[in-house]
Length: 147
Image (cartoon, rainbow, N blue to C red; front, side, top):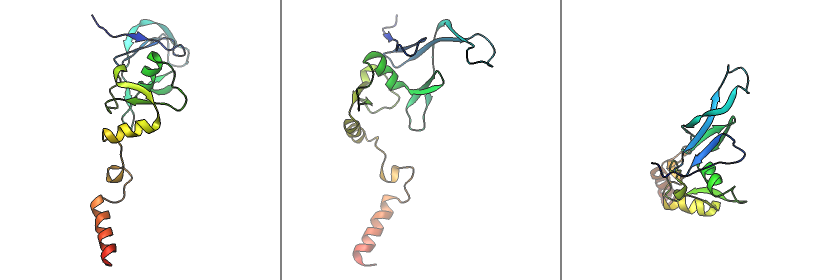
């Protein structure tokens, strides 16, 4: 028997969220896809498979809008985000959405976590970097030596 605990969020009727990071739905299609209202909340609970965004965070589409899974799990179990707080991962792993790994925290502390876990992308690791660090160092050496 599973020890997963589930909670709901009032604004997302027909969905439930597991403390293991899972998202479940009872919505089923009951007619042709022509109309938006061709779904009913009458099916068995079915686990949804998140999509992965370009930045590595899993997200789910609920009512035709994207939501990151870590924010949904925190909202279901802890409550809505306090003003100015971000959803943070304790271990720095973006797709580890277990409740035990999540917390609401400040953007500053989230940045500290990213530095600690070495997940903050800057310098030549950045997708928009024009130069490698070795090239920058060579240019600085040339400048300092007058070449």
